[in-house]
Length: 220
Image 1 (cartoon, rainbow, N blue to C red):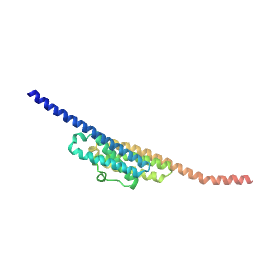
Image 2: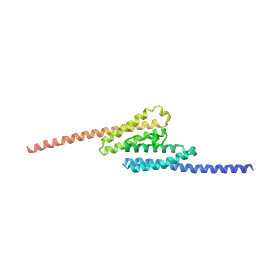
Image 3: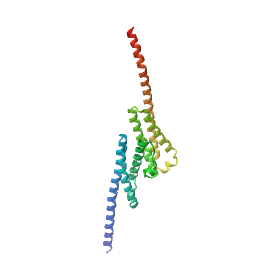
Image 4: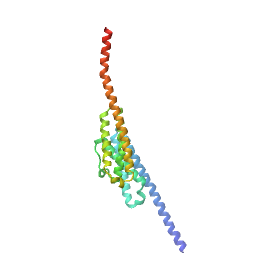
């Protein structure tokens, strides 16, 4: 009788564990989808396809809302490394797309993510801004490149003022160190491009004078 009772108990335990494992797999799939949609939104923004980028963010938001609702019932299954990574990617996509569209920083409340994940996503925006700068320089738009370098500087400086936050947000200091190196490299790229344009403009002004002198010599 005792063994029979234990068998019944363990059978129920097994069913409950199987149910949780299935939910865990479903949740992970949603998290992966959020991350993928967020990455696609960032890529589309670089391609100047803001409408499509915002559509991807909308799809990601739908999944985030669903995960948030399910987290109330299954917090142990939802919260973890993959969910945190998905939230950060989602935050980064929202912040970056809005910067491209409006040159305005979205606050955590508008993004709909916790403060810690917001600042970690914000730190990653620096890398995406570098891509904007490099694209602008290739297009000959130094002014746009300088504007986004200013944005990169602003992000880094403001994050650096949050001294106590480093204790509260694991990984933020490392991201800030990476951001600093990215900014230094970007500043060097812009400096080289500005010098190149100055030299190019000088040679352009100098060339007609040279041709004029050569023409005068031929006449002589």
